[in-house]
Amino acid sequence: MDKKPILYLSHCGSSIGGGEKQLAYLVANIDRARYCPLVVCPDDGVFVEHLRGADIPTVVLKLPPWRKARSLITRYSAARKLVALAKRHNTHLVHTSDSWLNPYLWFLKKRLKVPVVSHVRNLLTSDQVRKYRFDRMDRTIAISEQSKDPLIQAGIDGQKVDVVHNCVDLSVFQPAYGPAHPGEYVVGIVGRIEPFKRQKAFVEIAAKVVAQCQKVRFRVIGAALDTPEHHIYEQEVRQLVAKYGLQKRIHFTGHRTDMPTAMQELDLLVTLSAGSVIAEAMATGKPVIGTPIGSTAEMIVHGVTGCIVPLDSIEKITDKIVELAKDPIQSVRMGQAARRYTEEAFGVKTHVQRIQNVYEQLLDTR
Image 1 (cartoon, rainbow, N blue to C red):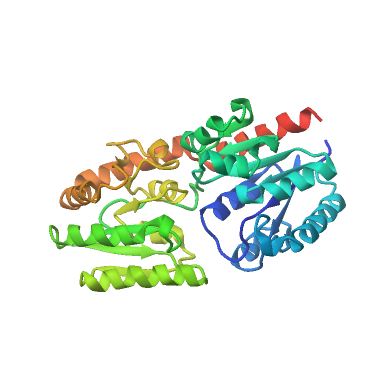
Image 2 (cartoon, rainbow, N blue to C red; image 1 turned 180 degrees about the vertical axis):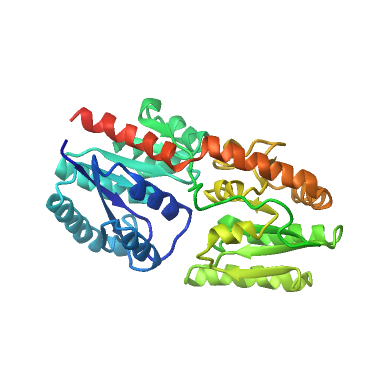
């Protein structure tokens, strides 16, 4: 059987977020007897190093934002280089890990006549579905039913949209039950420090929890990207911590490269966005409190592996944190259930096979 080269377009090469983790799981575990992965990253850095360290062929090629006016000339130059690269590697299929790269997929599809797959990791509006021309994609993979809905509402054929939840390496993220720190209950939020992750709301929650339960400590795990906007937001988060006098209660860990250990050091994860951190926390035996956005409500079994609370209900999140902090047995029981459920639902092997099924359907029709 001839191996089929697959070209992957990554959103980032200089840092590792949830999308990059999921892409790494895919290309590291894809059936190498059938497929040859090649990842294109727009910049160099830790994600590129991670891929190459895992023996994944990786190329750095700057891909300027297609729709920005400043990219009017450079985008076509980058796209032509991408076509040349794809031709050299006899690419059979192109898969992007972020929908903003869809214009590059369309450029490749027109010139190479190969199927293209776009991965949706965010909640899109119907306008965004049209703007990024998902109608031109051969298949779209959404990480949740909620992420799929705007595609269908915008007129995309449901037969061309697959839902594949995020996964986690269960051999790396091992469970650690019981109090992470005797005498304390540690609650964390994980992700880049940015408005979408809502760390400011997390600080507001922490202030209300501390007023009711002195044993709770908080961790903000992650760092801001090196942009003015992200630095400003991080400054606002830290100013809010100072406003509430929580400097000794909230610890900023910065970027962690040892996420399995970082998760094991928590008693509870709070996520106010969504993403692969849910599966990671559950794999380490930690309950998760989340809001009904993205894949969250589909990954957490309410009342069993964690809790789903209304999006803007700081009070209800506060109450649930206090409840679990005061009842560590319940917290541990939820964490044990979370690990069991993760083993059933979010293994890497199942995730990769479902995506390979999409490839096989597209390539068998060529």
